Length: 135
Image 1: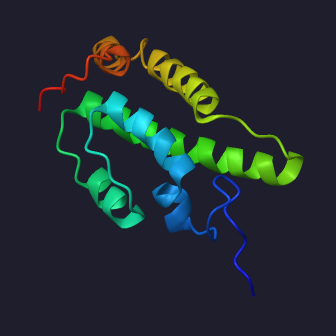
Image 2 (image 1 turned 180 degrees about the vertical axis):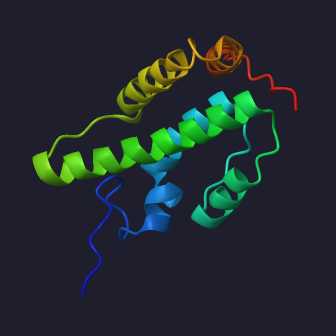
């Protein structure tokens, strides 16, 4: 049985490890997201999983990183399926724009129950200076 070609990069066979984040398209999106979370960028599935399991930063930044990682996987899978089903193609920047809005909305949903958490998460997500959150 032939492995289908990756619908995001059209370069190699599709697999979980390729899609998350060996594929150049998915890695470009993950690069944008990881830079916002100020985490060291990993390209392989196994190392990325281990990295997410061992995050040792303060709760607001850990939660933001996990939410962002989850959103990245969701948007990549959605883009893959949209390409397969309806032959629509979006740029990495277009997807990042939607992912950014999703993360901001999720952070705002914490505001009522924990304004301090929400404030720290929003400040970290919107701070594009590249400074690291304190541990």
